[in-house]
Image (cartoon, rainbow, N blue to C red; front, side, top):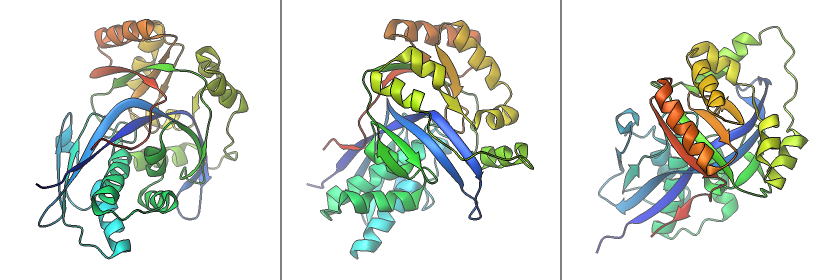
Length: 300
């Protein structure tokens, strides 16, 4: 019987995204407070004659199926390090929005890496898996780890954070995507000639997470990329306003956008916010979920 390994991997929201100026290598130093949320992709890996990628689920047509896909790149890099033939079929079942600022592609890379490690029995250390993740992209290490973490450097150096309770979220998906590189370019354009401060995590925000205090978290969430995302996609301002009007404690663009994240005081209010956001006509669809969520997990 052909063996298949399936890994479930979560989306993320950035409750703080502090962005420094552009570095000589083109990246930006970040203070990036990640929370994994209960929206998941699944990546299944099966032995095959050659490496191939397939995908199903919402917006699957937008997912590249060649070797630029982070899932394929993860399989190729692990195989290279262990002298293996990367002949696997990678099947991605999407539930995380595509090009939505919730690290769906990064999640698929982390999921494929753990699935291939399990299938091939490479027994790579956690440190090596995280090293490969960092090579693949700034958000990929957190997709592997999950929970909550502070990402520094370009976001790939992680420090786990304590979370003292459950936070309830509504995510509003936009009618189109936004390119992360384009949002960073707009950030650079908007800050040209200005002194961009060094990114530092907010201690008040970290304390709010540790206490599980949604009200305190709402007062401290921030996203330095939000002005750039709104500049490229002005309609998002209407979605943010609709969420606040419906009872959200805070509303912000998730990462580079265009998904917007609306923090609710409880699950019932979250469902009300979701219904009112849909009725407002300012978004394509909504998802109600909670955080934190576990990182990449082998299902079988």
